[in-house]
Amino acid sequence: MICSAHIDTFTRDFLPPAAQWPDFMFGLPDLKYPDRLNCVSELLDRWIAIGHGERPCAISSAETWSYAQLAEKVNRIANVLTRDFGLVPGNRVLLRAPNSPMMAAAYLAVMKAGGVVIGTMPLLRAKELIYALTKAKIKFALCEAQLAGEMEKARTASNDLKHIVYWGDGAAQSLEALMQKSGYEDFTPCDTAADDVCLIGFTSGTTGEPKGTMHFHRDILATCDSYGRHVLRAGPDDRFIGSPPLAFTFGLGGLVLFPLRAGATMILLEKAPPDELLAGIARHRATICFTAPTAYRAMLGKLPGHDISSLRKCISAGEALPQATFDAWLAATGIKIMDGIGATEMLHIFIGSPEDEIRAGSTGRVVPGYEAMVIDDEGREMPPGIVGRLAVRGPTGCRYLADVRQCVYVQSGWNVTGDTYLMDKDRYFFYQARSDDMIISAGYNIAGPEVESALLMHPAVAECGVVGAPDEERGQIVKAYVVLRAGHNPDSAMTRTLQEHVKETIAPYKYPRAIEFVTVLPRTQTGKLQRFELRRIAAENNSRKIAS
Ligand code: 3UK
Image 1 (cartoon, rainbow, N blue to C red):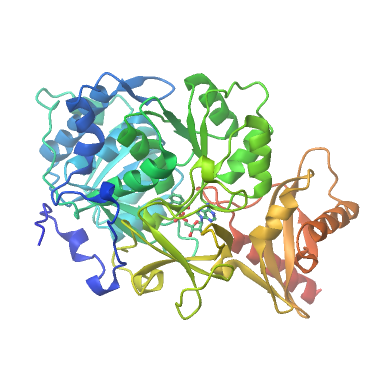
Image 2 (image 1 turned 45 degrees about the vertical axis):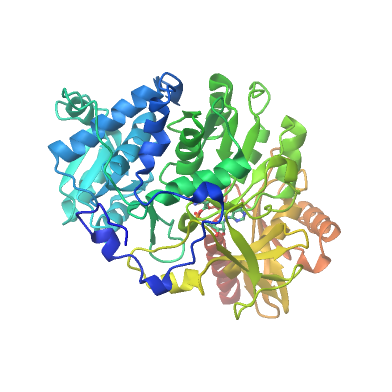
């Protein structure tokens, strides 16, 4: 029995019962961690100890911190939390800020002090903050002052939250002011167990209430030592940039954990819409970019005028990377985008291949350290070539905070992500759809993303979303919502052109019988297409049609 360092045992008390855990696998030699482990010692302090302290670590538009400077900020924040506010190991701390070196420092400080960090997206409203505060019984918050509005509203409505410390406003009691005390520059890492919880990632909650996924100190290193080391393969000269918020584990891994594990540099942009991401890559000579497929598409139109020759690796996740996007990016930049599927439950990417093994149209092969298979509705493993549900297990996995949906995600020791996949004989995985996004039209199963990929191959299409619309005769029909590129007309001739294009590209029965032209598509803060929203619109339109 490993001895927890948590004095506040809340996260341990609300872990799922052992029988509902996924199987964890540590076969890879890189994944053998000692029983006592604080991930921040490994990610950050180790570099100082081996003389890497003067290397650039965190860059924002305003400043550059070396490894030693970041480590000192982390120590100072950890001292403020424990000495000024009485944080004890196991306490939860909510963070609220745009991506910035200070936000990264706050993440690391909470974990170094043995606390449990809960990052939140800047756009969240008080209602969503209160949900997290209540669900995870959070007493402390660190917040960038510009985001105080919703934070204060949440404070009044929360029984749990006792202390909010702001930074960035120059106030006498600001976090920076408190950090200045002498003696705060050093902090001994809390002697946590490898399996003490250090992070709760909330899922985006597109289907019901957000779920809190709990991750251990060892999980933080495991994602770096599986995907990071074996697929991404970054080095100390790499400079990481990207758009996902750190509150989204895709962003935390890609912009903080992987760079630190490699001794590299993180470039943290407060806002990274396509223009600013491109400008950031050029200005800071970024070498590795993490973002979503839509952002690669949007950047394609804006490449002229930006010198992105420093870039050597591009990673895409969050939703499927259509082949048209892969091809266009390769043609424009010479870089093969590395697609990878990850999930908040799994912490980061578990299927995805290094550049030299990429096959266009496939998410890739399983990441070393993980196992993946396609199963049928009864949970039986399917041979190559059969479409079914994706199941995965490895060093990380799903542990929901007090949530009955644990038994939906974890079945017989496997994490069942809710995605439909096909694996070929070479063990490459091909994404089909979210299991609940399959369109069933006149008895045919049609995967919306496949129709989207076909549409995106047409030069007139900028963005699109394909869902099932209710239809009396066929049950559902394939309906496409299309954003056209500038200079193309949203008329019936275009509808026919696109329908013909799909029929010529994939099996004709999959063509969109209805096409609606729109100017934007509904997306989550993490860049995912909100298909449920399109389905709702499609169903509403339909009932209006029936009524009229
Ligand atoms: C979908 C993909 C096809 C898939 C995430 C990388 O997206 C992340 O986490 P979420 O919890 O969503 C998980 C679900 O998103 N998805 C993600 N990547 C792909 N579908 N191709 C992909 N490449 O439905 C999955 O089940 O928001 C991604 C790293 C960390 C993450 N949290």
